[in-house]
Image (cartoon, rainbow, N blue to C red):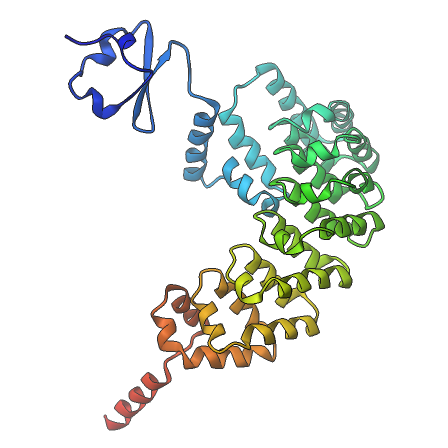
Length: 385
């Protein structure tokens, strides 16, 4: 006899149902059955896929369409920045329950913003009144950004004013952090100074946040010389700087400090790299990126000191070239005018070893290096012919 669905555990593996082909048809009106990770799960009628499952399905659809998915934004959000929020909102919309009233209101605002003129001005004013809520919503954050793009300076200031007191929450939000970055882009340093002011005292945690790191990077890009932003950098560097360079999100802030902050602040990053052990950090997934940035964006004297220490140990250049993360540091060495010649010599001498390694092969292919012995044999073959 076929057991009823009620007699089975809530989660039954598919391999346990081989002898019960009629199970799914047993009580179709009472319960439903869905497959989750090779397990057949009994669910109540009307219980749809979870939000995470809907998000996963939206992700697969976005991949096939070439769009940007939410999980990709979590990993690379600060790299995407401007322009990505529209795609993100469209993908996230698929994975969340819809509110027809809210959707129609946002559609009306969007239409008015695209029309321009008086309609756009009225829409900007209306959006400004709701910014504190819209900025934290998947579709609302997009319409706020659109409003910032078309608004006058006065309208943009009205929108930004609604975020006062909400900066720390917005910086950690998967949606509102885009709005903060847009505010910095469209408003001057003085009008956006409230962002840096509200991050005082908690910026280290924000810099290590998946979304907040992008906000700190934008502050450095647009107003690194402002006293408030400079104070934020000092706060970030007050604690373990090497740990910042090795952090999944914090390393992006460290790279931005090297590119945009003062010479003294940049030197603190480079000193931390040297004290932490260049050979070890050059092989670290995230610190290697910071080290490459220091070689290419630091001062000439700092870059030369780093290069000399990296190449001091025999075989270190070749060893790094054969490492998945170290090879990026070697690429940084090859961009230095004087040190690149020395690095190339090391690579040329070890070309056979490099050809046996995946990353070494890619590097010598990029550089167009040839085995000198092979060239000699080829020359004699041509002469003999």
